[in-house]
Image 1 (tube, helix red, strand yellow):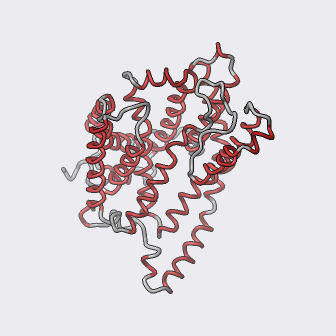
Image 2: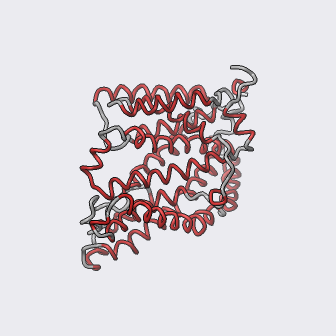
Image 3: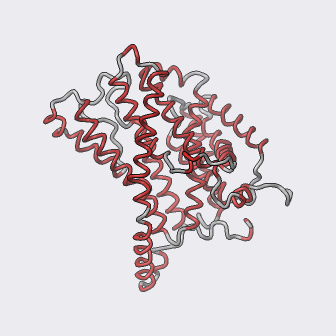
Length: 384
């Protein structure tokens, strides 16, 4: 590589580690998730299956892998900046749990009673109602009793949460990798990711798997390719030609039955390249990170709008603008009212971490109980 070549690391440094491209990517991908769910919510299972069986599958199937690759790159940066595993895990809890808890409560206690077909006493005493609150802990339940039974996509209020266990799995796996020393050895983590990719390709070839969405392991794989992109950011060229090639390869792979996992690496590069662009931040984009709120509230609002619209009006061009406007409103309230406030608890988290370090220092071998995460991730001379 030429010493004058622009790398991912140099692009990141030029943007002072805050490239605006990632802000736009988060927002655009979240909106695209809502747009893709419009097919499900307006037209039902059979039509959605037909769309996913056609040429639209590749662009639709690219959305979530890009989201996870983006998350991997950004989380790796956060991982590197954390003093210990305690702060890393604590930040993930602060980022995910409060907003998820509020979303769960709104769905179960506000939307549910208005749209259930059951008497309220039966609704509130149904085991399905109680089980729904396990969503807060990552044990995902999509339905509430008697909810949206007559919608084109029936009996689901939070279908988008199917990715949540895989997101949690990414964080757990990264934590385990740190304990195992893999996070501090970039080449080892990259080799493990490629090995997992080869295994998943072989399994997909045997099963011929393809369908209405990408599979969870594909998302985890993209996350770790995003992590690897961050680890090797000073060795990977930031190239528009490579970006175009990656996009083409990803689309082609996602268009071929059983070839999804070949798209993971190019999808990760495409995502990171676009994220490291530096367009001027629009005032709306700079005002907050609304992507998580869009993810949480998109599907419940879409189902609610579908239930309220007359059948003749339930078309994508009527449904999508209404749903998106309401979703953005709820996402803004979630950010400013819940998520941003929760992140202010970092000071408490720092005190907990300091206490854990003091305890670990007093215990023989305690440094293994509270290890530093990825601070060494890019300090290796081979990566500088």
